[in-house]
Length: 174
Image (cartoon, rainbow, N blue to C red):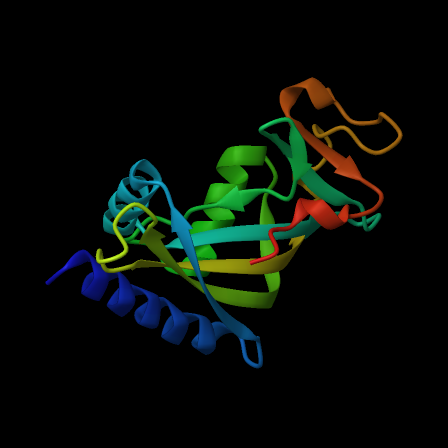
């Protein structure tokens, strides 16, 4: 089976699993053309896992958790392992990345992302699933992350912080 077929089948399997956990979420589909190196990386990621899960994670004060990525403050992203269910794997990945335990409470949207090689348009696309979740933080695990007023045990230098508002650029548009 080609990586295109395998990735398409895995995306469909993950969509079925998400429909079991959530209902009524929008599904978008888009295609992006990327460099040959980026296409190869996407192909390899498809072998290891298929979902990029972004999480809008809120604490009891309704602050949103952000992480530093490439000089920007964005919502945390988790990549469930191929052997994990999407929800449990996303919660684990967010805990591993941020130190905050959470429960996913909603699914904002899902995008089926086709990735093409811009240098060789004849190469077939590989597919990934991009999911944007909402989540609530476990109150006991939030104390070590700095808040919008500088409270909390860690510093923003650790690359994780709470903010009072969610910046528009903090969540991917696809």
